[in-house]
Image (cartoon, rainbow, N blue to C red; front, side):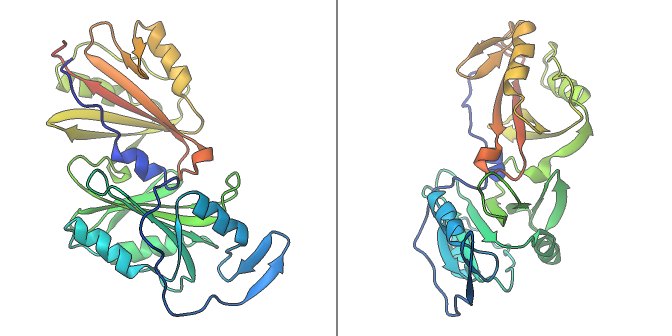
Length: 294
């Protein structure tokens, strides 16, 4: 297979909406902190925020702010040359944000809004602003009117210590992006899709299926002029299981990647765990194939 750069795909970040690098200074706005009441879980403010929520978000790289961070989002759009707009969610008291410390390498703007589930409300806001939005398992994903912004949003509830909150992630929709809006649902393991991809790039070898898959999602992407295929299987960690399937079919493993004997197919994976507070738990498999083995 032709030597190529193995990319940490933006798709992974689009699924992992916490653990982001802390970026920028806290933005403040006029308007108050609201009334508070004492509960068994700590001090609770309007919107469902607790003192433990603050600790959690700050520990995971978010900065606390009051109201919608219009100016910071404007900076994010400006530095990426994006003219599409990001609609505001109204009546937000406390909000947490995180953005890239290295936007030249990969940029994002992540929001966490503790409290009740407002995902449908914000989905409607996005649709009204010209975004194309579709459900992807437990989340929503889409692109802006001119396809310059990718967005993923979802509500996390009762997730292993994470406060109940609406998580929203915006990323520049560049040619190398691998956003959730690209994914299509299929029943079971997408054998026909994978086979079609392999034949399209001139590979005659086959890729074994992961058994016992009820549904999966797939999408193709181009990177440096070469096509790759992503397969996402929601649920628990299937990485080790599929590794065993591949090695049983003659694949070799090195540095977390699997190669077939002909060196025409590479597979690597990433488990998006609940402990990472991903909107969608599951395993993402990246399939890279080329008939030109080296």
